[in-house]
Length: 139
Image 1: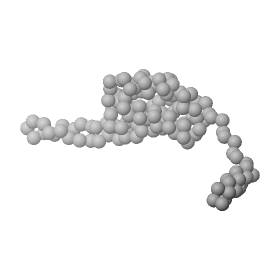
Image 2 (image 1 turned 90 degrees about the horizontal axis):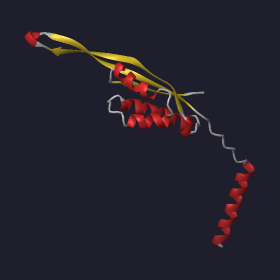
Image 3 (image 1 turned 135 degrees about the horizontal axis):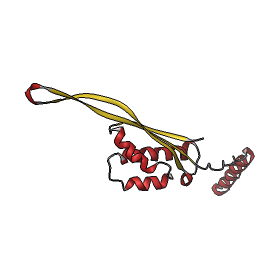
Image 4 (image 1 turned 180 degrees about the horizontal axis):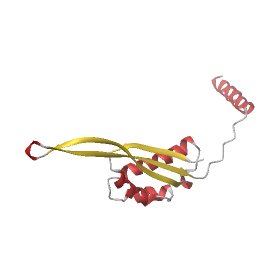
């Protein structure tokens, strides 16, 4: 089972974000974060945040080992476009659009072994033994 993280409504053109996403496609998460740390593009910041979010989701919610995670898929799709007008000469108005994008990261790796639950008898025995020790110290 893979783990998904999305960053929606990033106010950078999808064409610019796709260039940065292509740098880390198929890499391990640690390598991808190192690459993005030294990438001098504005789009590297939201891509890095999306990958960090996927890593945290895998670690805390799905019990994956963080050092074994690999980027299976990273996709950038166009988001909403804000339509605006720029004033021009002779009272004209020139239309332009502010583009946004959605970043979707899918990571997969090795799961941790589930911890065995402590038997109810052992927990009760431990609680009773600590109660006896505390009463002896008070006396």
